Length: 399
Image (cartoon, rainbow, N blue to C red):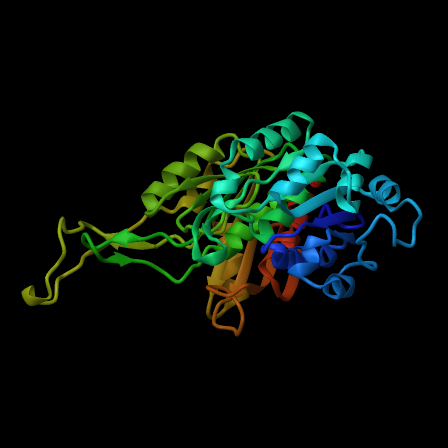
């Protein structure tokens, strides 16, 4: 279950071009089970209409200190909130919040609340780097305000640089993490692997697979949102979930070294990566030229990382494997579960529509060493991650 489930979130939307992304933030929070109240500044109306947020949030949008259904809306909203998220947080709003200049409903609510606050700045690079903006952020941080720094990328007007609003997914993950101090994985050390390994043939070519890494990243984000200390061993360059530490690798050997090091003290290891089963015995130093004819490539097996983890598994450590299959899914998954000494294996038929590699959705069956199983029908990979970690929590409770 998401740490946003049943929580009351105030989403503040300030007047920046990134206000359109707040629509997705709102939707994701509502989908996670939160009650979302939206406050829009007057300038925000220039970018997104209030009707959009009223349709997606949990109540009518709040826009003014004077025209609200409540006589003191800032006090009511501030008192009822479990968390206030400001996305985007413009330079003006940051300045007003830091100085207490509560001339509009959003800043008045920020000053009136005792709930945790997450600000997500978004502005042009020159503004983001200005000393006044950074000093205001330093002031807010000292006061305990959570700051999700912007990303680098394409900005308004075609400019490129720092100042781009963090992705809606990372904003929601940061909110979940703030509210998961008492999460069911709080203090638990979790290692997750993601992506497909690449084994070099020569200086240009590799043996690879179709794994996108999306499921592994979803598991890492979900674990972090539930309070875990997460290390993600990855071969792909996707936006890193908030609160997750990344170790970047490429080959199976590099992944084994990283996982061996991280798993020594890990409470939970989730091997979601698609590790190559074979690699060339020797890779050519340069590029193999077509004119030299078809090369003979001799293969050898790569290290079986999951089997080694199963052999070395400590009492109380939970080990999860994945089985991406195209036929005999259950039989192959159960065989892997037993042979590699796993606590759980997550199996899917990657030939099915909308399932597995490259998709944002997945459908899996979770097989437990106890003999129990759980079917997760086609859903987002974050939902699959949630079911997977629910099972991990259940296993830990039985140890």
